[in-house]
Length: 357
Image (tube, rainbow, N blue to C red; front, side):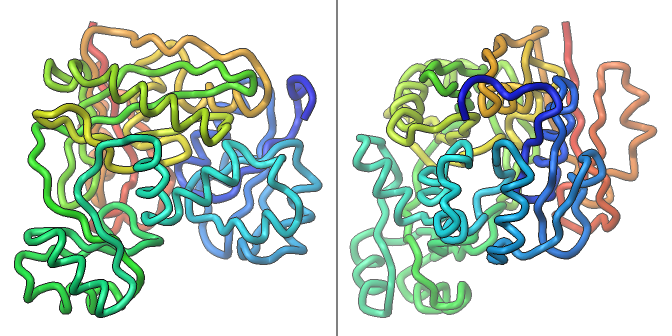
């Protein structure tokens, strides 16, 4: 793509969930149309887009037609298969990039990539079979967490190992798949670094929030993040910027960290807009969604400065979405309903952001 996309250009979004929905809304605000590519079933992003292609991500003919109808492609989750994109020669059309997508899909690849960049991580070992499982528990010890190499998110695809005898059962519970065993770490807080990188290499950062998880799911993001996190943001940003440049990514990337007594400890990367950045819709001069669209469209980046003196973003899980009227009784609340029909336990149905001045 040469230069900025013209108004009314079509941005293709791989995936039809709430992140795609919020990307499409941001794109419409600055004059672009969005085309959603998602498998069979409800795709809430399609509610706010001009077109939808319904097909499997591995359906190369459908993917080729979709790509031809779009001026640039992006994705709203990191488990989009990369092989069809590469087979169709679409690597240069996909942003933030196929390399970032490929690395993020494998915990083994991700751990190796960030280790080579000099990141501090929890102690880890790769597990591929019974022999390496035994070696991993001997090297890492217990307690530990066994995580599938691929397809794990929001606490899924994980098994807690409380002692060495739990390891075989834990591996069985995740389907005896290739995995990473991680040792437990002592930390005070969790936080994320979210950045946007333009095609010319310019990088801008949003303020970091302190993130509160329950049962492996993000519940709240809070700003200011507190002294412990604030003291570690500079080092975390240095690693994040180095990774974005190594990946030659264009768009928004998210990096999650533990704040420890020894400084920031890298946890994982999501090469996309992120739940912990939803507060930026109302809480920043330019949201993560708008700046992602600006970056992939070749437009100048917007300011990432925070608005207000205190911000709290809370996810609405399951039936919590049914309390919309009570939530909006608070004049500081901004409600985002994702349009999902089935309020299942553990399912993210929306979020509410509160700004204080």
